Amino acid sequence: MAELLALVDRGKPYPLAVAGPADLRCERAGSVDARIVVTDPAYSLYCLDHDNRRALFVRTDTEPAHAPFYFLAQYEHATGAVALSYDELHALETPEPRGVFLHSTGRCGSTLVAAALAGPGGMVGVSEPDALTQLVTLSPRLAERELRELARSCVRVLSRGRPVVIKPRSFVIELAALLHEECPAFAAVFLYRDPLAWARSTARAFAGYDPALVTDPAAVQDRLGTLIPLVARWRARTGRLLSPEEVMACQWVSQLERALALRHRGVDLFTATYEDLQADPHTVLTALFAHCGLPAPDGLDAILAEDAQAGTALSRAATSARDAGSGDGALFDEAALTRAVAGLWAEALR
Image 1 (spheres, rainbow, N blue to C red):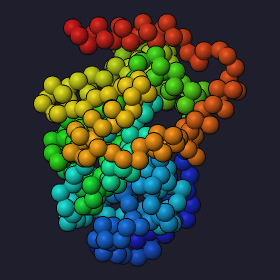
Image 2 (cartoon, rainbow, N blue to C red; image 1 turned 90 degrees about the vertical axis):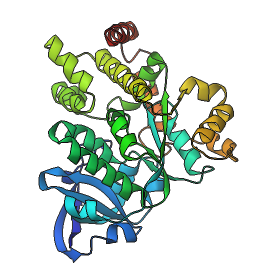
Image 3 (cartoon, one colour; image 1 turned 60 degrees about the vertical axis):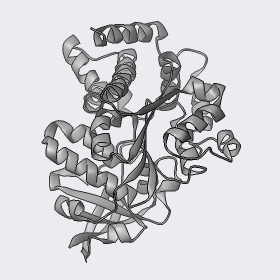
Image 4 (cartoon, rainbow, N blue to C red; image 1 turned 135 degrees about the horizontal axis):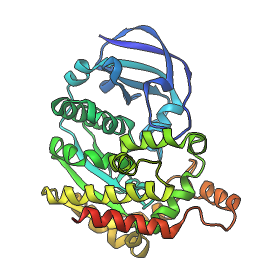
């Protein structure tokens, strides 16, 4: 039997922090059949509690799949929880998952594309489920067999027999090859953006989102190093904290490398740039839908006119407000970023 939990309190260090068991303070409220998490649509997989070898499912009063960020909607609307042991998680009977893995660097139109696939495409959107993000940080500690089993089980319960578009956080590209091997019925898509334009957008969107960026940059880079291994490797190599430009260069280059590696492994990967989407969105989305085995989409104009991240800290309005508050100065040294990207690419090609 699974453990039924009553929610007492909640607290995160900042809204966009990766989900974890410490976010929700719960008390045991009894036992319940583990199958409730796949038979009751009010439950959804929130995170893994690996220290206790269990998965936490939250009960919400709204459908998190309708939100721009799955993990945030789950956190904000949770009313209770159920904890399943890993054995109970793996034993759940669910249909073979199918759909689309929408990988990206972030800040490149991926939320809009996910909305298109979940609207005209007829899929269920799961935008940034953090159980998959956690698997990136856990992967060095797990035997490959257990990592694969957890990845497969997480995707199964996120899908629950529905055709889904899973848009993970950008960091999950680290596990893309494994995910596509374990979930062969998923189409593969990767979106990216020119590095300088991507960095500008990233700096605007995430400036100040984590207070530790200013108060404890070493801790931030420790955490990023578990999500972007190249950050940890370059920091160890240089023997110092990396500059913001170096961190962004590591992220962009590393994620492009992972996408290239996915294609080299034989995965049929559809790629498009933000610039492509801006110039001719209908053509790009029609080709993307065809790649995913979907008919040409209708009703795209309404989706293209919307801010897919409206109501969140990453919306156009929120980033514009931060722009207004920061004045006209550049948020980072663009020449330094360009040098860092060029240097990392040169090493990657050796």
